Image (cartoon, rainbow, N blue to C red; front, side, top):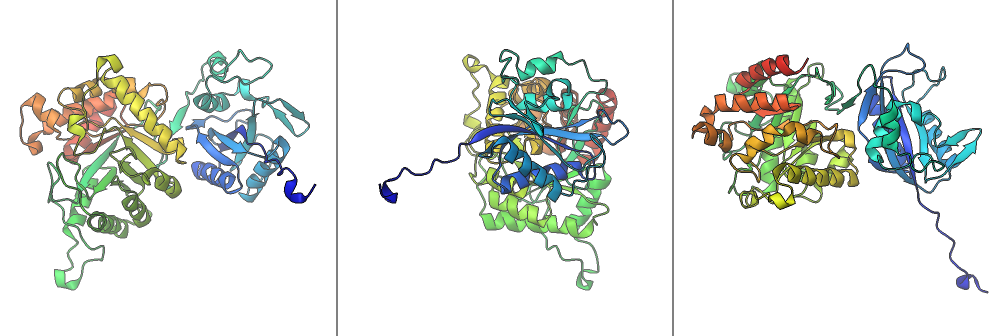
Length: 481
């Protein structure tokens, strides 16, 4: 038989494995992200990730708190070869194992491998520590709650093992990184403080503050202008002094009926504003910047200029390149619930009772956006959600969303993720209060901000920073302790 007649060599079979991720030294989240990127680079495809959880140390107690998570990977490597690859990643990332179960910058363990049992002096699968370790079971249960851990006991599922553990003396919380210079959001920490995101619209046509801010050059002031700082910089300083912890910079209005501006114009509005902030606030005193855009090219340019967060009103649906771009950027993304586009969303606000009604529909559609983000390569711990007040929701539907925000936070598939709520000056506030002018809706907005904090929001997006920062401080004092 000639070589051309021989059967082609059999392709290596792809297997699913589950890897535990841990770190308690240095920038813990950054080490875990580096390890995931290394797995991808070496052909161990990270398909899904859990949230990241901050946990107390176990066994060796005299060490810093850990960040733990888990990931689902696709690999053609056999178990021992996979172990070798993971240990090579640990070594290349500088892991120095001084004592067993002691401090380490990165820890990668094989938990499960393709429904298999494997026993070797170097490796046991399923990992023997799974049933007793909440820091392993909790992230694993996010990924595979209905999967059996032990093939010899197929009736006992991951969720069953987790439910059987005694309550933790220190409840675990998820962690969502914002930047390398700021603490992450801990969405399950009952004493966390709410972020105040200041709206900075670089547009002439936004519904309540259009035309207030003119795009500027990022160059410093010159003698010809008297050495005065740019007016936008003064505005930014005022927002921060008033209590803003984030700036949300946008160059495209999403008000109903507003025409879409060319890409070049949106870039010209957004990028110089970000550069202005970065040039005037040193790394020792950094400012969190979010870019409000549904275009991947703008997100990419904004992050290159210094933005930390991509805030997409379409949840990554309006530009097919958005989610893959955010994944490559490694940025945190806010996925908002919206139907259609800003031009069509007003006609898509029907939520029939036969399909579950308003809250279940929002929840299901956000679960789909989270799934799309994960499939594009965005780590789960990099996702923030927004229920989308005023977007494909009219009138008192928005009040219902605020009333049921806690229910959305607990929805299967959305649990543990942080939430951003943007109610500021919106038309439903005017409808309820009878105040037609957006800038005069401060008191109504204040009530919605307090309701958002009570419901569990981690970020509130506002125009009137000084007033809403005070509302947030009071609401935090009441509900966050």
